Image (cartoon, rainbow, N blue to C red; front, side, top):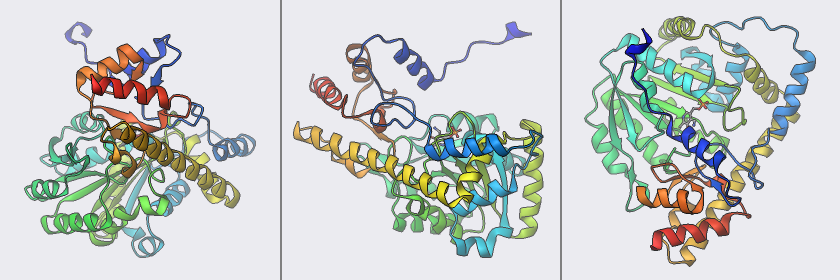
Length: 396
Ligand code: PMP
């Protein structure tokens, strides 16, 4: 049987991480994998998470299954974090939700749900997008198409082109949008643009799938959910995939959420049962521990305040590095003003494939093939080395 299979390509980001780990150069810099790094280059566990885990260790009494839907109380606290209170008060009966093993699984569940009802739906992806979106969609058997998102020359959103392309989507198609801190461009829509896009989707009966992977890492918890809330208030149907991987630093533990907004409670009940059915077929029941840790934080006033403070520190550091990088490069005559304007962990540098290879092979600076850098990988110890190397490579 197994001789029938041919090899598949290794994930490029994990491959890059393997190369980085094997590199002996003490000046090496990893700007590849999307993990937050602090000023010392580490990824320490949030204090709020540590404290919550200690509480769990002392108080958890059983390890029985939590069931395919997950923990209802975890679902409630995440929904409160995402949606405006007024929206939830009036519409929570229209929501069907599931605790998922991370955001990737929430996405897979969303696409499997769409495929069950509408096999011919096309999922529209921004160009560029997170490189794992496409394989997840393909695993569900749905078609993909792409819409323009980023103007390379201006380093900003190609909003007019985006709207023009999406106007050709069919009713029942899905448009995948990132809520904030777009991976890989760092470019987000402003509220006016969210409203304009909402109008188009409403008119054309297109359903948005909002991927919320960096909630609170851009401009704040409320600010990063503003666009999503504009859509939720206006549209009959919407899907949200959420992950606590980045904003709680729970990457390996896998805490996510899928929430589907339907036109009525009756439809939401049907969707809820289908979601449970799909989860049962895929993994049966999600891991309990990371969701329980998040629930503890969000239901405890002191832990919640601590987490918000830590998240705010993360955000401030990212924005500080953005500004420092931008100003230093500008002072060398390099067009880098956009780095300070964008948000979240990622931005795209103007590098050719050959220059990315040179950065890696000559300077031990690891950047993914698209030119995406993890801003948080830069700190006061390595910023000068990075700027020096980058300016040499682009000046060659
Ligand atoms: N969406 C985007 C845009 C992401 O960048 C990521 C993680 N890199 C995810 C979803 C998935 O997150 P998780 O690790 O929780 O599966």
